[in-house]
Image (cartoon, rainbow, N blue to C red; front, side, top):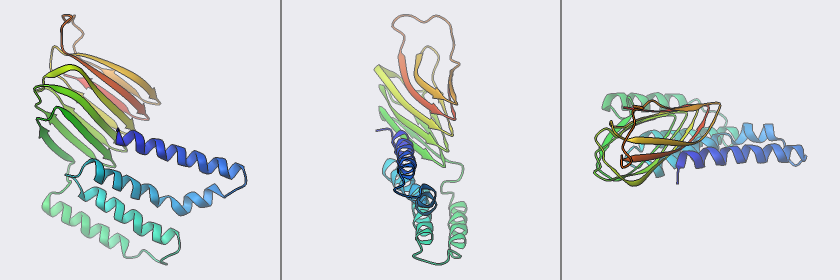
Length: 219
């Protein structure tokens, strides 16, 4: 599953449902959104924890902040004056220990990659000898996928989703890259070498969905 696409799709369906119920006179969509919008932060944090267990700190902070704000918007507590000092302390700890500063980067020899980014960024370098593809998503964030040292397996497919962010994919010379999908107020660009390639050249298929963002493939 592409976690970024699932998150953004569920968010759109939820907002649309609230607006529809508002039109039917069953609830006040504006009041419901003002009260329950922190659930978006909680959901994003939980999905981030599930998708990237190695990088748990930022999703945990996002989940905790969403929970605290939700307590305030639902009237369970009267004040969140303690929230911002807690956030400052957490950011300070991250800076001291270098957690999450400058995004997360990792190298992998796995044949399938998975990277989910929301309000954050990541760098993944693959050294796979039989790269099969995987899933990468960026919602209000970014991702850099470096495949320059990878070798392709037949039928490799990379599923990419971008919403209000960007993804950059780097491939070696000699690969044929085909991009399919649809951009909505965004776009994708393939700037790999255009020289003719042999029929048996390694081929990477990228299935991309881009909303208010961009995806670039280059050497």
